[in-house]
Image 1 (cartoon, rainbow, N blue to C red):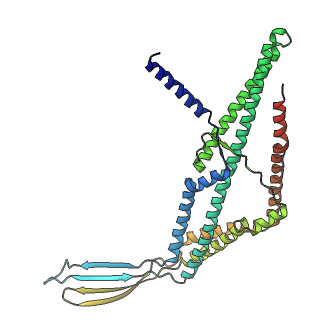
Image 2: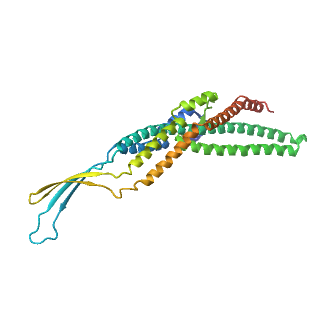
Image 3: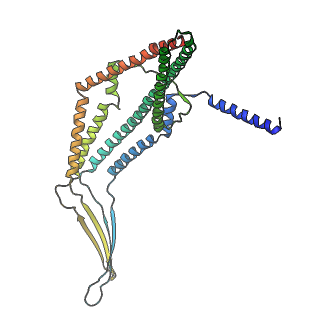
Length: 362
């Protein structure tokens, strides 16, 4: 064989071997913690939470600061005059808006906004991680279902092959062969559907976390233990991120915002001082005050808006402190308990029984 043909065959064999090795590479096992940690570092959702917090911080800073003073300067030139032209005049003035009696309320509002925004940012991060966990659980379940369906399909193909080999003996009817073929086709269609769902759920998890899922196998998530209802209830009312705690702060904030809106209805007084001089050497010092018009019916829209927000917070806070909220918690705990028992039953009884059945099926 010529040397170039030998080199060519060697190259083709090496390429095939490397391709086979790449295809046969085992999937990388990925844990939920790895996905969540990657998301905290790279996900755009975290940047969105930071941006929301930054907008609130901007509002906090504006509430804590006084309105900026204003510096004005202008030149007066005579245009119409009799006789000798008058000299030009120069004037510089400084003004400072003053909001009467509102600085204390503005400070309280800024403090409550800071407290609320920090809690809400923490809650958004926790909700984001929980959302990732739910999608991760769903994707892991679909991967396991895909494995079971692939095993069932392989088992069905073996049965179909066995029936086809024994059909000549007359012991296997055509109906039995077609039934086996239909079972394989049904399993194949179900496998396609699961693979379709895997692709969709993988897209969701990729969008949220940016984690590369190619050739990945999710590790089985640990099934958490559910606390008793008493422990669950105590945790709900002692947790600073719970609904009662959060809405208590939001109600206090809404109350202070109503007070601030009412005080902002008072006109802003703007005193100013000025200094002017003409070209003849005469100097003038002036004092004045400015008030916006009209004096009354100011800021009514903001007051109405804040009152409605306060009413909504009061009504919901009353609900989360009532017996109805406890009944809702009890129903939710019962639903979670039933779902936990269902998952435990599948994990300890259904899946092992199906695995044994498939492994020992003839």
